[in-house]
Amino acid sequence: MKIFGTHISSGAFDYLSNHLGQINSIKEANNKLYRAFGIVNFFECENDFQLLKKSLLLTENIVSESDRAEYGDFQTNSELTNSIAYYLTTKKIQPSIVIEPTCGKGSFIIASLAHFNKIKQVFGIEIYKPYVWESKFNIIDFYLHNPSENKPDISIIHSSIFDFDFNSILKDIKTSELLIIGNPPWVTNSKLGSLNSSNLPEKRNYKNYSGIDAITGRSNFDIAEYITMMMIEQFQNKEGHVALLVKNSVIKNILFEQNIKKNAISGFEKHRIDSKKEFNVSVEASLFYFKLNTKPAYKCTEFDFYNNSEPTLNFGWLKDKFISNTKLYIDSKEVDGLCPFEWRQGVKHDCSSIMELEKRDGFFVNTLNETIELEDNLVYGILKSSDLKDIVVGKTRKFTIITQTKVGQETNYIERLFPKTFSYLNTHKKNFNTRKSSIYKNKPLFSIFGIGDYSFKPYKVAISGLYKTFHFTLVLPHNGKPIMLDDTCYMLGFSKKEFAVYTLLILNSDLVTRFLKSIIFLDAKRAFTKDVLMRIDLAQVANLIGKGKISEKLDVFNETYNTNLNMDLWNDFIEEISLVRNQQLELFN
Image (cartoon, rainbow, N blue to C red; front, side, top):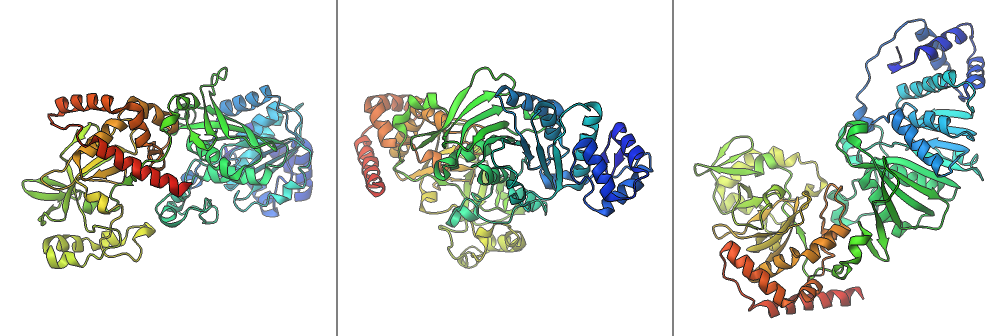
């Protein structure tokens, strides 16, 4: 049975039909429902009261539900919410005030009413009006089946969490023990923005990223992360607890920011759940628990939610280092420093249908299946993350057009020097002009990013940012031209093949692999990032492994890949990375 496009149990329907039929006053109706079920202002306005009365006259009022994607909606099943509430009781948590910042259909509220018998007030906030109704109907149904349970004051508030004034309830929270519980939206601000959703916070770079980071995506954030930080900022000085279902990336980011913000929270726990089982989505997520109003802490213990007996690992801050696995880090911490070479991301163009090419029968073909005749000068082979499976790569299946040698370079020369290439690009001018990223705003026509002197180095050592593989790849030139990488890859560029191979052997060592496993988060969208790779101190690793071991590895490399390299340039290599490293240390000291 449905009313207002949302479900209502037959018991709740019968109760409302039998008890509201003769009532004509919204005040009288609200008082009656408050006395029976503790729901404060069940009807927020006269229109709601009259609308419900009319709907109750129908046996069924089916209305199609709107697209819940724009709210980032994943409703939590009652079995999971009850398991979470029960787990909190094992920690001796018995709150007097419960807040669910995005309450949906009220599953967490019902679970809280069932497991915490000292609750005095409940506040549920929900932007989607049908769910406001369904939460209230579910509360009625709960008490019809459990009439002897404690009945606190329950406020289900129709509002966006981003517009809600928490000062209106802060006055009620003095020495009371608080529990913030729920399942905030599992989407990013940019995703909701692309859906033209109204369920968005005010647009701002809330992590204060600067320059290129702010406009190329690092300022994109998870809505659940924003809501969690809202709760911390509002309530960190109140006695209580927080238990939220969020993506694992949110937990990592909250812990990372904790070293800067030093919020009064501690006791961090991450309880991994099976999102496929619980929500039928392929997202790595967990129950995130922590305690409010405590001395700041900086580490988190990870558990399996379905078997909480033993922690699986610890992660977070160890002094001034952020790590994903404390145990592995202790065995490889000597590697943690500053890379003497700057890791770079590959080429970014956001125009794959035009810029991504294959070669067939001597002609280039784009993803629109158009056959194109181009001058070879600006066409380069390009590798994607999926192409970095081997240790050595010297050819490509894809090609791209490199319109600039550095960011911001004028592209007028293309029309003059390479008319075929210009004609092709100009034909698809609209595709370039409609690119959404602000990085292309006020830039020359056909601009690209992630391009510089390093892009044209003949030898590169690269790694995929997307794949969870711990090997690095040597990228060799093809037909006398350097091979490019796309923006899902990270690379170091070298003019000397020996320097590139020495670096490859160092990075593919067991020591570096153990170190990377101790600092990366495999459930992140990009396990490897520039920040992570810049922590590999090549000079220190080279010293720890030693010239003799590298020489042995080089012999194996020569035999495997039919090369004839030697260690003659090793001392020059060590001198260069040590010199750059020392200069960097002087700058930081």
